[in-house]
Length: 521
Ligand code: XMP
Image (cartoon, rainbow, N blue to C red; front, top):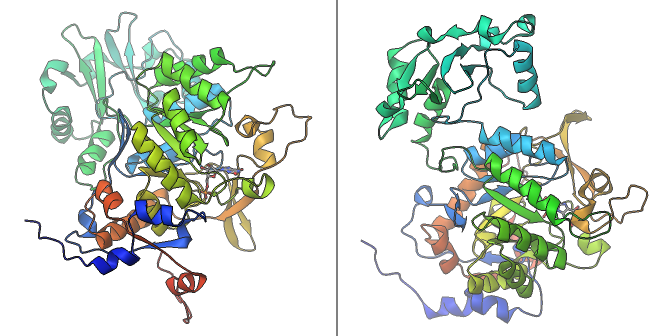
């Protein structure tokens, strides 16, 4: 039973709730390191805290962390790792639309319980055709059910024969025949398909695929042992993978406010691309630009919203209440907040605009509450403590730099003076804009025109895997919540009490007067 909390009015005079603290500090814009949070009476152990967050109807995460839609941060590998950890990856748009679709495909096909629409092959195809399809669609698996034109199961094409040496053979000549393929009738799956498949694999050592058929022997799905094992293990984990209703990993994709050659919004093209993303099963689309409080972004959001009334839509970036209200009215469910806080951003230096992140988040959060939309803190996060502070106002955070050194981020590892690095560049850097991101910054994509860069090209030291980085970050968030006595993110927002810190306070907060022999990480 909860005990009543010991309080003192004195604390309230020094450590203030957001609605007192931020208006009292309205003359100066604050960011993460400008404030610290006061501890509160707690009955909550960090390990028991819940981190789930809902950004829109149909978009719930098990951890409030999203990887940024940047071309050195999120492609399929990162999105898969984020979703497996309970978060979300936003696939960037600095690639062809076709490639972006195939990245989304890879995430949605990654791990399944019952794969309801397994990739199938036809008996008259050549093995060479199958190899080509695998390469084009970047499938990591090589065993395929073989079905006739009516969907009837004819056999299984095993990975052992999907080899270039057999390229000229027909699938029909290389398949394992129907009589030797293990199947289960869809009617037998009942309530717990995974348990049924798990038992099958235990009872049949050496068999790794179980096909599902109906009474007419039409293919209805496929279980693989590795998926089933992973899912069984997942059930014990505190932060489960973020999955859709069909048990596929969730995946987001960014789009821009694309214009045609006359400079007008290219609604047809935007809609055609979003339709294809939706067909692939994308769980959220982010209209991602540097200046979200603009007619182009608003019209793009409206266009997508009217065609897809239920698609979770993120939009940004903004830093004002009016901008949040505008994008919410246009139909966005979650608004990205952040202009210039990013580790590779130079927007504030180049354009002289942008608001330090905590003040921007406060202003945005109050407007968002009025419109019943969420906000996402995007950029400037360098440590778990920043995430705790961001989550006192926002429903999730977006990180770029923190993840860019992970092996799951795109890009090659390079060695400089014995140290390993990966490239990390701003989407407003010259190189990224030339590669296609110029629209995000409102510049022409004409390669001959000079662009004003708003980001730099940089390097990040290679870090551990996303699993390791997230374990550290989540541990920090849970500690913060334990100190505030917050069992979940709603309580964290209610319980946060802030005070300003000086440069001396910051110095005190970091390690000092010691020779560090081992970092905390
Ligand atoms: P962090 O701090 O996580 O920031 O590295 C990532 C976020 O920064 C934004 N972004 C940019 N902002 N110029 C900018 O002003 C750029 O070139 C740029 N590239 C990315 C973006 O919101 C990202 O999520």
